[in-house]
Length: 196
Image 1 (cartoon, rainbow, N blue to C red):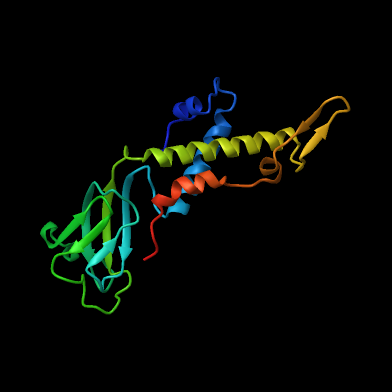
Image 2 (cartoon, rainbow, N blue to C red; image 1 turned 45 degrees about the vertical axis):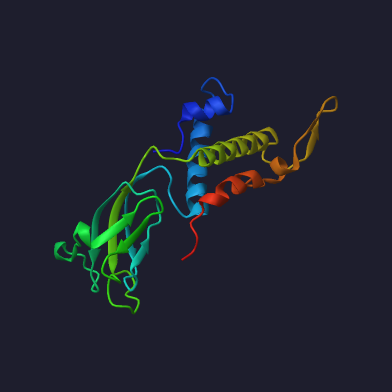
């Protein structure tokens, strides 16, 4: 599921007709991928399976808010068979921040245990924050303008063209291929997952 529908993006960008739909669809996929990488999490929702180190009592999931934890398995051998599943009462899910807390201390005795916890969980598909949708739409618009400018310039990076009668100027950011406007990264700053 995308962060926003094609119809809503077209409304926000005040576009009508279907001439740019393929280009918009490409820009939307690229914008969603950029936002997921930049923020370190996926906003569109779905089911995720992650592995984490087991020497602590807290696990920080990459995606949140958490709708449900399907399974939590702890296995030092990293085989994750059915017998390694923990019962729901052995841990607490802090859904809003995507944190799982072991009730009885570390998931395994302290000492690291990289990749010894496997968690499968879901996040809602209708919980994309408005600021993320705004950043998404701005990024789609920027890349749409960049693609249109490149096509208009025959993919030559120019700041101005003239046919002898008329002169057309292109903003520096569009002529040089600046990829992400600062406003987009400012909107996304509050949604980045901090490094643990």
